[in-house]
Length: 274
Image (cartoon, rainbow, N blue to C red; front, side, top):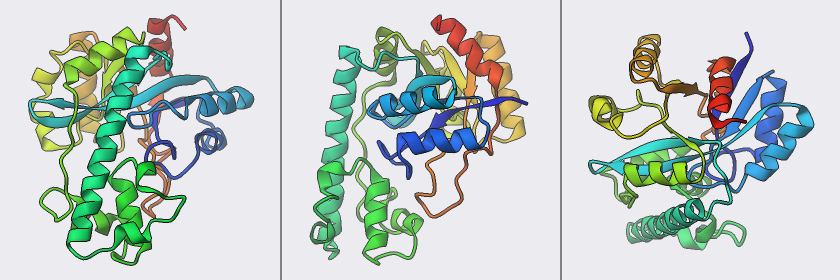
């Protein structure tokens, strides 16, 4: 069965592979269509699109935007966006500034508990180049402060740990509006990931979403069936993907393990009139 992967990350956010490398790996796995959906950035889209065109793989421009709903974080996948849209660029610039401020606070907290993280940063690995907790966890691992990247989260960076800093995020309704103004479609990302998201699903889907992510590494068969039913009832499009970040945590990459039917990609393209 031909399948798509509409949820992939590269080094432009917190993935292990360059945008070109992500596309090349997809080609080797015979993935029939893909979308690059880096967190809060569109910086890798041109490189990925060029690689996809060279390899003959249909490509969809995307991004995964962090948002807030009732005070809790959620993620929104944007497909088919105009990456040069001024309103989208303003939102992503604001999110980038918030991320940099958050990283700076994390580094300060690590210094306060005796970990010389700033001293350990190389010239090519400045604090301004770090976009999320993943990069801080990688640094802790490289310094020998933790045995694995995941241990960096568990010991220092997760909620309740010494260097945890909450995100400042735009409201979900604002993010959806921006996506629509950028001529894209807004999908609720991985609704089965986390208890709070599942509990608030009916409220969240009252927002003007265009679709919902059904296939995901965190979704069981029962979840997929439930989300497909919800999509049918609410006349929403559906998407899916591996949410692959490469081997950034030292674990096997998830690309190829989630097989989203190709018709999902085709219906999204139809709605976008691509």
